[in-house]
Length: 379
Image (tube, rainbow, N blue to C red; front, side):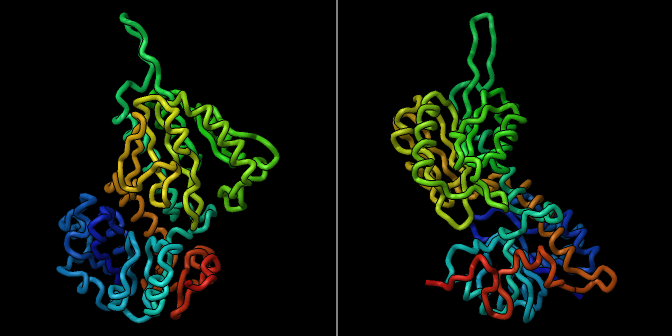
């Protein structure tokens, strides 16, 4: 019998790793899904809703974990949690693999097989398992809605007998999944949208959504994308030219949303303090990169600050602000991943260690860190 454990997240994390829908489907795969009482409450999944779809609700984390084959979480679990699983069990979560290396090695030392969903390969087959995309999509939407709510003016142009209300100008910095959703949402709300990114492929994407593309399009720009689709770190010379272009453009913007992140690195600083001071009073900056230090020089992660009449809004865990939707999507990502590991006929765990999605996400096995991106030992 395959047992999947779900325990409550920490107090700062409103998401959960299962939904009523995925409990039903995991049960159909032959799994017993053991959920700690109240684990889904912050995502509006009551114990009764989960139980109705086949979950076994238990009073404590220990009861959920005891002898389980798989632990699924949103955030990295503690070594104490993992130690209560069956020997060699699987742990599937957002492990923040570049953070707290000693803690990751301690977790690896439990001999559990650790899978980090952030490492899911960007291949067609794995799209349904792509946690970064599912969560970033929601964050991009929510950032625009939050900015529109905080902005003390109307978003769309309105023509009335008393005169015309101009449309808000919205600038999206970083055109990944979050940025594209932000562009689409800002357009739907009637904003005049511009966007920038160092990856040349994004120009057409921005234009297809009705936005105007802003970038220094030189030879370096044409080569500024990795094979995996991420932005490459740019030269100091290019950064200077791009900063000058952005500095001139940002002066006229009402709302700026920054989304630029490079995995494993501090967020690049795209907006200097001086740029902020040239912006119009009442302008809003929403910094989606706050968890990596922020894209704005004046960002204080987890706080809202004001500088010269400009509000800089930088909450942590942005997708968690839509916990119901975020949990539903994340739970489906996990379901799709776990589905590849189960023998449908025998209804038992049968991991194919040569599967690309398994190899791509496997961080630790048999007590050792094994992922190539984490080959450097802890300092």
